Length: 100
Image 1 (tube, rainbow, N blue to C red):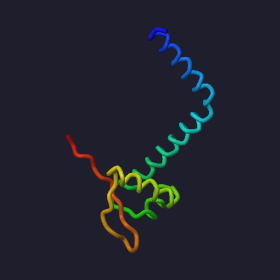
Image 2 (image 1 turned 45 degrees about the vertical axis):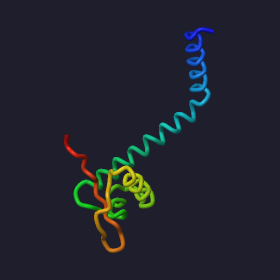
Image 3 (image 1 turned 90 degrees about the vertical axis):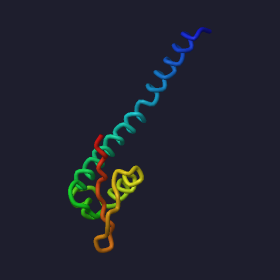
Image 4 (image 1 turned 30 degrees about the horizontal axis):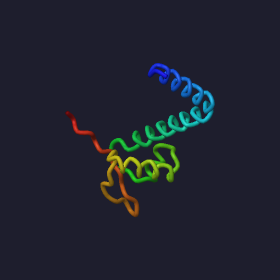
């Protein structure tokens, strides 16, 4: 079997898999889109002054547990930082990317 035959066989297998799992792929893509939209709302709410999770939830319309989940992920990747406390809540602020 030649290399070209292997490529054709692999392409056919991938096409078949995409067809068989079309619904799962569509569901995953929809979930990613939903998460991007939520992340955008949270990021917009965090622009300006530092805010607590309840303040971000109120400003974005996203439930507080979901805001906390996203902020935790954003913290892990250095997109937000804890910058203080407000009563019993941490306050979070977007980390600005350094300008080149």
